[in-house]
Image (cartoon, rainbow, N blue to C red; front, side, top):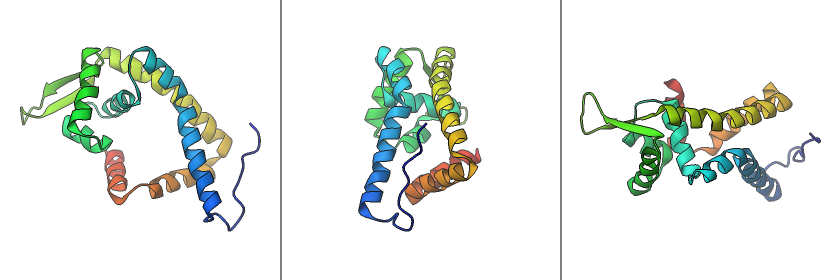
Length: 163
């Protein structure tokens, strides 16, 4: 990989450097998800479906309400996405144990297989980028990404990682 472009020292708050950072974020996002997008598109699915598969895969028995909070979408939008995933046999829902009105979500075996395939490409790309960047840069990335989040998103992230 060619030497990465770096902002001028002590000038990282200039408008052109901040815009360059946004450019980096958007170009990296597009490139990072390219493999997943292609596989999902072939199935008639998109990034919203991928995000649901990812979070439900990370937290089996996630409630619909918790998923709504993580994704920050409307019930109607989530309903369309979940409907497609359930119809495609990728996610199943069941009532909660304590509250039968609660709907708990988990991946089906087909959903687990798809999520594993999608994550495999993302894992390889993240691992490559982490290895090429080094531990200090990865730590800086984690710090910067958390500082891009609102206070609410930071709290969600911390709670999500707490278990």
